[in-house]
Image (tube, rainbow, N blue to C red):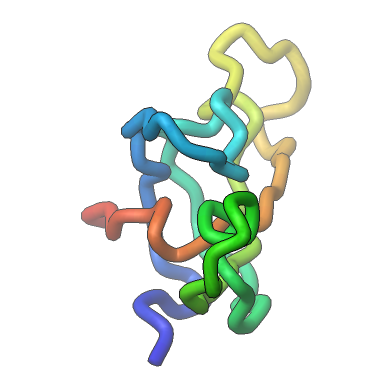
Length: 94
């Protein structure tokens, strides 16, 4: 069962594991909103090392550009989206 639903606010974790990871560094610590459940996928941390992959849900998460880049000079409603694994996300209070 998926941990998040469309519309949930989430924060990208800031941990920096010594292994392979597929979460953009510029999104760590940032708050976004779940836009879509992309379904289950093998976790890249396992696949990169040839291990049997644990399966995790991937979400499309939308971030306001100004949340990601505070000096962003575009419109206040401009956004950027990323597909992120559930284990990289924490629920954020509304």
